[in-house]
Amino acid sequence: AQRVTQPEKLLSVFKGAPVELKCNYSYSGSPELFWYVQYSRQRLQLLLRHISRESIKGFTADLNKGETSFHLKKPFAQEEDSAMYYCALSGGYNKLIFGAGTRLAVHP
Amino acid sequence: EAGVTQSPTHLIKTRGQQATLRCSPISGHTSVYWYQQALGLGLQFLLWYDEGEERNRGNFPPRFSGRQFPNYSSELNVNALELEDSALYLCASSKSGGSPSTDTQYFGPGTRLTVL
Image 1 (tube, one colour):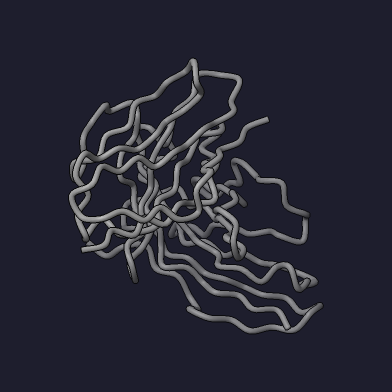
Image 2 (cartoon, chains in turn brown, purple; image 1 turned 120 degrees about the vertical axis):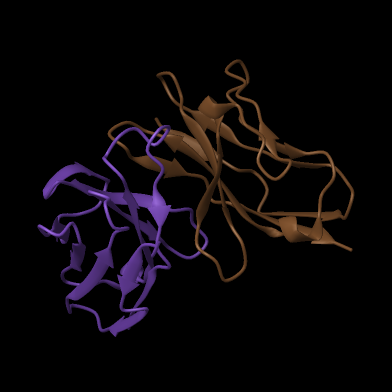
């Protein structure tokens, strides 16, 4: 079965603290994974994709096939990082399979 | 560049009625995707249209249908509405229908459908 699990509904941290948003997936083939973000009153937008191995806004994510994980990390959280974060998996034929999302709240 | 637009913003219907939701992709994009986001759940893939054809469909009953017009805009129709159809419906577009790894899906603001 193709599935994305984000175990935390809410992650609350203080500014400057490290952040790790967890994502685990289930997929039989070679996975293509993404992180999408939705800031308050804005549209859902792509944050990063594993194939690019990029760092966006200080966030990175490494695909760990052994642990079937794609956790999103940032060493020092900023208040403007507060948003809803969705992990997604490409399930073939352009279908994106999303997790339920994690709300990140960064407090001053 | 204008983003993906959706109309209406809100739609209220009663059980058994039909709902029609509309989406205009980014200019130059040929692929349109529909997702449903029910309360407390992640987005669930509904439909993918490219070049006027339905290319993929999620696990939804046949009363969810749609089409893509020659100008690449799209319409999602939900027949015989049920209470559990109440959700935010998001439309996304991409340039050419390639893999999401190379052909980013850009999302619209959504249509909030409420079924009473």
